[in-house]
Image (cartoon, rainbow, N blue to C red; front, side, top):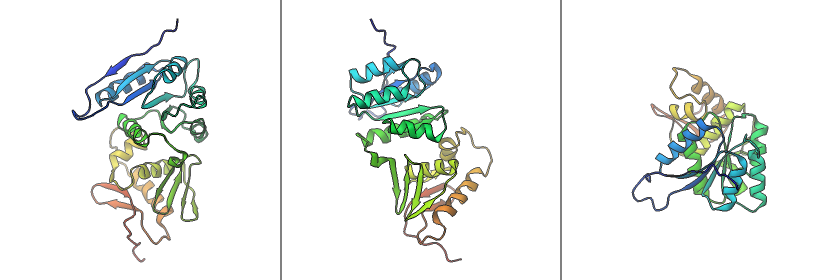
Length: 252
């Protein structure tokens, strides 16, 4: 007889008018991470099932429908990628968000190629996990096209981790890539310094530092230099915004 480390947690919905509660499967063997995610998502109104290893996770994922699966890569017994490949080969298209302590590009690409829809590197903030889950839930059955983000003629291929503007390839350092990806995921919105510190740098406080300004100016030079239209805007006193306003660069 199989023992499933499974708990069903139903919190109060975020708003009384929430018609259906999102049902998420978390497959995570680290008790602290699991506790942090379960508590946070439950407070946000999600219903959660938790599996502490790959075998139980696979059993639950195949046994009932979920709106999304949050899957740790490193699991005892059956690892995350094997679980994911098994799910996909069984025709299961539930959106999967991979959690990984491996910050390496190849590891992320491998996870996406195995059928993952998005990834989040540990340590992460709950707000970022929730935002990515909501994006996955909105997209429903995610097509490969969603791995390419576009703003005007700027595009970011998240599988190959390459950026292009028009026909021009943009060489990005790893941190610049993360910064651009975050800005493109929030295209049209004002992104504050605090959001960037938490979402890109994993700082949960504001160290009085110009690290963001330095990276933004380097990124702007790569994206907007020599272009007709300016895409990366500074919003005075608020933060930054990646959007196509039709504004031209000021003449030198």
